[in-house]
Length: 297
Ligand SMILES: NC(=O)C1=CN([C@@H]2O[C@H](COP(=O)(O)OP(=O)(O)OC[C@H]3O[C@@H](n4cnc5c(N)ncnc54)[C@H](OP(=O)(O)O)[C@@H]3O)[C@@H](O)[C@H]2O)C=CC1
Ligand SMILES: Nc1nc(=O)c2c([nH]1)NC[C@@H]1CN(c3ccc(C(=O)N[C@@H](CCC(=O)O)C(=O)O)cc3)C=[N+]21
Image 1 (cartoon, helix red, strand yellow):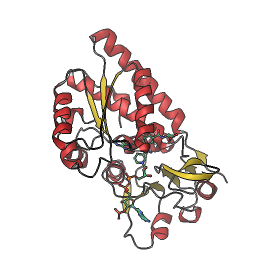
Image 2: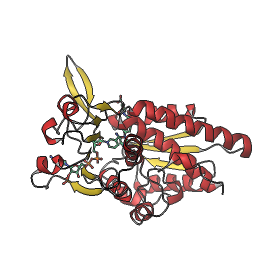
Image 3: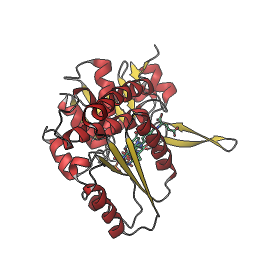
């Protein structure tokens, strides 16, 4: 039996429509336009794609987009000065510093210099702490997008066994927090996990965020489970071409799973939609306005 495809591209378009509605109202009723500043240091090709689609979709939602491209050898002092300027700018409601940063920059220091109220990635220690203690925060975009897809498909996730493959600060850990918040029984697996296939086979919900092309085969998937593939890996497709694949082997996993997200067209578009949603939420909070209930979880 073939799995249901969880169409992140279509779902993300709906989220962006909701965002655009709120943005139009903010402009009409309050004369405020949400603004998102993206800071890109150096020329990471994967980041370029993300930054490009983000800029386009920000404009389409009626929001202001500010791009700051800095040389790969930019000093930490110059980067911190730019962030201080964006923190102080009332037109900027969201700030995203594209990761990974070049090695000479301390990414923890840089991220923690962002005003937590403008930290639309949800990576600042203050937002991480708020999320971990179940308080209102900025929720990281990729895990937020995954949770939206899961809730839409399942309704309640209560009591389900969830396995998160990967323990990064940007995907694995916040994903596990959100699933725990929805009363899943959560296991976080990583490169030192013993008997990974067996751990994965216990999952009703399997979230793969490892960054290894097609690492998860179908026989690691419990029949009927929901597979959320966060991986974005560009691989050689021969004849000088490349293609995007996830961390799961889609062909075999979709034979066994009950539902699965494709790559591309799954989690990726949801991440960008949630970034716009978080920026709109941040804008409402900054202006003392009620924040939209349909932009978060
Ligand atoms: N769709 C989207 O919007 C986004 C997609 N991504 C994609 O998601 C993937 C993961 O990203 P990110 O979390 O930043 O990656 P990181 O490299 O920061 O983390 C990868 C995690 O996977 C674990 N891991 C690596 N190899 C193995 C293995 N062989 N077996 C078990 N665990 C392993 C690592 O374990 P350990 O900690 O032990 O080293 C680590 O915890 C990438 O493909 C990235 O491109 C990322 C962000 C957004
Ligand atoms: N501070 C920070 N925040 C991030 O959220 C962040 C980051 N840094 N660094 C890089 C990763 C990666 N990431 C992606 C988001 C969307 C797609 C996306 O939309 N992908 C499309 C395909 C795009 C294509 O065709 O290449 C899809 O999956 O359908 C991909 C990757 C966000 N990241």
